[in-house]
Image (tube, rainbow, N blue to C red; front, side):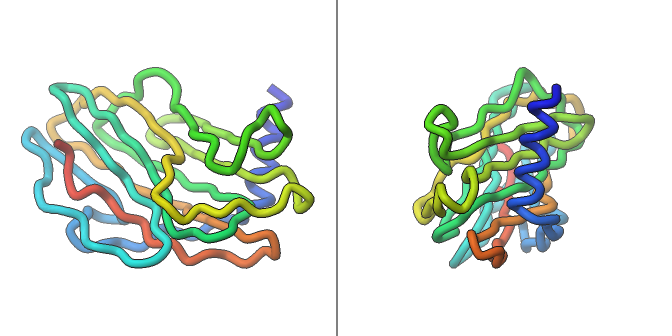
Length: 180
């Protein structure tokens, strides 16, 4: 229990307080995606530059959600919240080792699931560990949900990506445009 609190403190300190994600046209309110019985349809707008993206695949009453990051450049850490309504999380979220392995003391990761929100963070272990470049589309987390209502929403919020010098990276939050 204490270890989780220490990891959370490190991620929050390294990644900053964050800012709300900006709404994106055709991706739902707040840079998210929604779906109903048939999904929201349409496609996500093309985004150039740093982006955090929600990808969702629906199979019957199940929804597989992946959040990826791309074009961040060299970073020390990231944090974001995936807010959800009309969905019930199944199992624990998996976190990709986008900033390096935990066992080698290079990075630390945190996923925290509470009612209606999955919080995710990753941070390099101090300035000595250096920054890690995230340019290609890179998986940051994956979570499986059961669809519990005809209408559901997924929204990215509190997005923060930081460089070693403390500068923030302006990141666009993008939804996948609808569940499939």
